[in-house]
Picture 1 (spheres, rainbow, N blue to C red):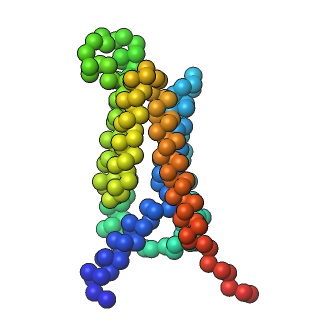
Picture 2: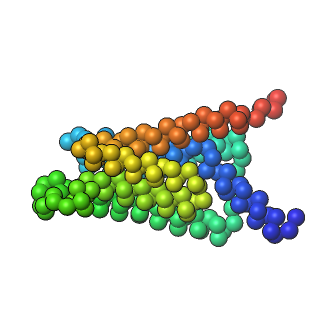
Length: 201
């Protein structure tokens, strides 16, 4: 088997690692918790939830995915690229969320006037920036379904503005949608990849 074939197989294995739904389940749950926390007096705790969930993703993969689909040791350059992508995605998510919340607080507290279409759309910024993060995630990981998540997050944000809903409401709704998609994928993955029979002692 030549190097091109090995790279092709590694690429297929890398793509398949995202089909267990855990990425969606954890990302959606984090967004759901952030949205719910924002609706409570303990809004600051919402920013802690995603950080607390990060260590559980590899643990879940080792417990659920690897026993069913196996484990692949990727090349050093691919692992380095993946680590860099993960760091960039986390940074992008944090920056997007902070900018969106700051813009929302500026408008909601009447620091600036509300006249004009742009000011009317400011409450949608947290969701729109998260949608941008979903687009970047889909592009960096080669997952086209994340573009659909991005469209859903953007649509929910705009609907939130139309119905004058608190950003926490549409963020929680978007998180629930993404998490539900991940749970559906996970159930399908578990069903289609049963645990191998243990050898008799």
